[in-house]
Length: 73
Image (tube, rainbow, N blue to C red; front, side, top):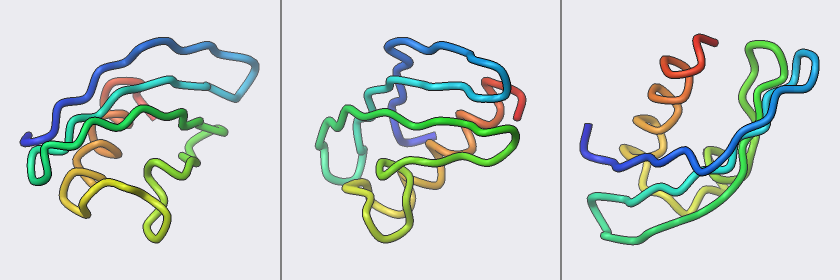
């Protein structure tokens, strides 16, 4: 994994899981903070959105994979 993902905080409410995270994009060196959420198995948030994310595609995909593995969803 080339991206650095740090979970700042998270809270679970029913089927929703809200996650505050900080991601360092290895390709650009940019550090980005944001919030994403799982609703059941679906992951939402501008940080990981294909068109709205400030992250490079590689880092965005690695972040999604990391979160799915870490939280088992």
